[in-house]
Image (cartoon, rainbow, N blue to C red; front, side, top):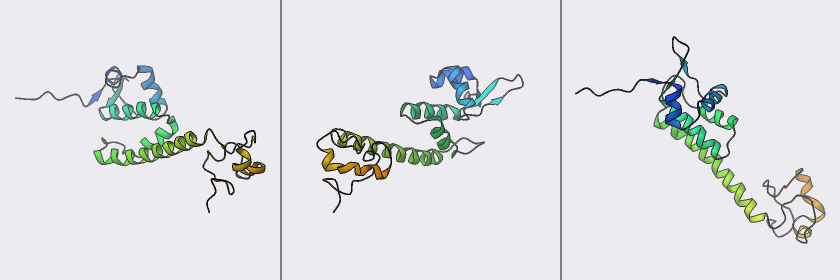
Length: 160
């Protein structure tokens, strides 16, 4: 019995159905350099089946807050001209997890410090006199320095 083999390349309409993305979104991702479809003799886009996974990755990464630039950088590590292997995806997954872990660390810091001094230099809370005396956080630069990861040299959070 012969098994029916799927076509090696799929149309943009099929890609849209498989990924749940609008055709316009697929074209946008092509223009952004996230996928590179081939063209048939009639000029129609033809996608590799592996592009389904690429676009699914793009969709998830965007939902996680990653920019198109960040996603493109991650996808650039995948091989050109062949379907990425499980090992290829494991490498990109590891880098993706590192970024997610860093975001989790930042969010945890924000959650834990938001009700106290965040090193912004406002000096409007009583605790600012302890955590950021004389606006000492300004030496690190503008903005909420302690949320950016800088540590006060004095006060309750100081090491030592």
